[in-house]
Amino acid sequence: MKAAIISLESESSKRTAEAMRKYFDKVDSINIKDIEVRTYREDIEIIYKENKLDGYDCIYAKGSYRYALVLTAITTALYDKAYMPIAPESFDIVHDKFLTQLVLQKHKIPMPGTYFAPTVKTAKEMLKNVNFPIVIKLPRGTGGKGVMFAESFSAASSLLDAVSALKVQVIIQEYVETNGTDTRALVVGDKVAASFKRKATKGEKRANIHSGGVGISCVLNDKSKKIAVKTARALKAEICAVDILETQLGPLVIEANLSPGLQGITSTTNIDVADKIASFLFNRTKSLKDKGKVKDTSKIFEDLGITPNSDEVKEIIINSEFRGNRLLLPEIVTKLTKFDEKDELVIRANKGVLTVEKLAKE
Ligand SMILES: Nc1ncnc2c1ncn2[C@@H]1O[C@H](COP(=O)(O)OP(=O)(O)O)[C@@H](O)[C@H]1O
Ligand SMILES: [Mg+2]
Image (cartoon, rainbow, N blue to C red; front, side):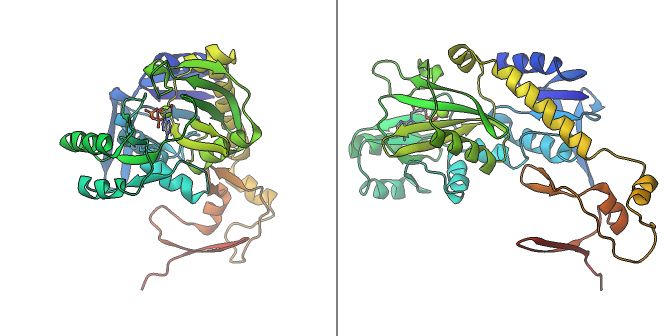
């Protein structure tokens, strides 16, 4: 099987590509910066070094928030052609802390109280009703760089003025006391592959490694494990890191990361996380391929006892197959219904029932 990793070719991505080479027959490492997206009429093509990107069984596309748009385009174009662990809609959501908050809240995942106001004036009004200290965050910041702490109304008010000069919007979050620590859980598939605690350096509140935080090994409690896996599922990212603040009242998720650094977590836990990711990608791709193995159509019809052109409604029993939260139907369904890409379809769905019908044109 052939795989590609599309990334910024950081050290972590190189390690992952290396690990993937142990499983897949061929692994191409592709830099996002060399990707072109061409859309024309009904087609969308992903071009890499003047060639159409095609023929992969698995594509692991990831990168920083600056590349969210191109990552969305790549996954949108190729999601049904290859196994991709992160869904198209994830990139915009996960790369924005407030959009993440909105999605996770819908999935009943506990997070710190967070406030948003579209203007500084309204944000200042809001400050009158919050308890200090508070955290002010740039929704697209990473590495602790967009996270500010304010002990009082006057500190928060001047911070808001300063960021408004940069013409960026911010979110305001309740400060959760954790002694300068946070927990990072790396979710791979439906499991936490590794986790560690990060502790901020003296005088610093942000636990990020980039802000000088140090990794400490820890045993993640079951509740946090469950919440991390639930977070990844809600965000439709089969591989992602989930940052958690552990409190007396239970875990609170603060954000997720689609392209987490692997060095800190590997050296702290001694778990070969690159290998865990690579073997997961391989097994997932293989099982999807095995399930969807394309047989000669006439043979499939014959096996199912179906005469291809008869008008009778056919009943087929299959094992349900999902890509993320999306239901995939076998190719035989396309053949029997003769649906094609241009058709408009009417879907009627209720618990346990689904019908799909071609929209009758007037
Ligand atoms: N609500 C909060 N209360 C206390 N500390 C926080 C809070 N939010 C973030 N932090 C600290 O700041 C760090 C960075 O915040 P985070 O939201 O993860 O942003 P980034 O994307 O920059 O990592 C966290 O690792 C944690 O140590
Ligand atoms: Mg973080």
